[in-house]
Image (cartoon, rainbow, N blue to C red; front, side, top):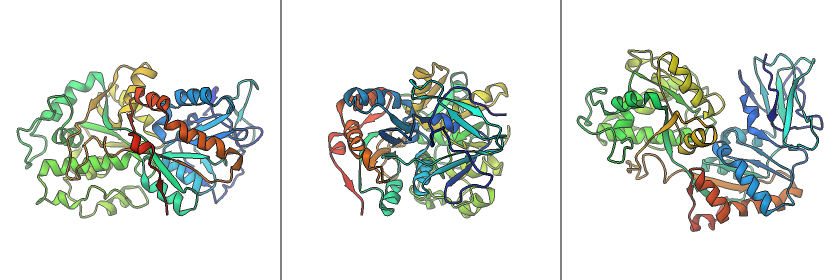
Length: 435
């Protein structure tokens, strides 16, 4: 039985989370989850909130500090609700006017109860006697942030967003356990792992100790390495990861002139359903040497030459790449070499905020790939922010104040200290209109 005893979360009705009937509301975005850790990404009470924020998923590493500074500058906003699940999931929540989570391990309806009325952020999860399968949340945001321009385009087409701006940047890194780094480094330097390439003798790391394109390819294609991979359907980070994989493939096989070159860097949208058959259809005709196909299809479904000798595979995270540190730690007892492509900020969060120094980053080079973007995507990862028109008119002023706050020197310093890359003055002051 799943019970969370003390969570910082939220409510969608006066008594807490709305109780579910035996049949789901068809209009809502429904997620079937075996685990319900997603609830830990809800903070505050959305019913009474003066400001509701749907923040790009990995903003969880910095939101407490941002909210504290915002309240310091704007003390009139005492109640703020924010969500930090992946922005693709937040987008579905907005488009479908609500979200519903159901899971196999919900024996009864779960509801949140605020034990201390003087503590608006802390709720206690209680199991009721009523039969049920989960919970639903109906509140919509005043502000939305994402790393995917397509998400903003979708909201623009729905008439929910008029304009947006870039407020910070990030870069990709490889998360690993410190005890496994020497073995992982040896794999990245081994040019015998992948046959018939132009990378013979090329270093897996540059002089600054960062993975080169060939080193990254060797590491992720190796049959010795397991991978904790974000879900491309709902986690914006994965589109940047696939672009990185494509750049690495092109570098290893010397494009143009090789079948891996047929894959464009921006060809990143797979079809539904996301299973072996669906992915098989998507990757049909694509070279088996394409790194994105190796990681997301061949290793994921135990196909091809990239499984031996230790049955290496790919885990696709179900809710959030917050699962990656657990996947890495779970592999230590096997023993199993496990890595995960993540935002660099997430490693810093594990080390400095979670007091987990054994989770470390293998940094990735910022050398330009065939699309003239850095391998670690540092010049392509743009965090976008917008006011959302969801009929919360009384919160309009608060939404505008928060967006202006993100542009402030104080907010930019907080983001930089968390590992983000500050936005330029031009980016902060340039508003991009949507048609």
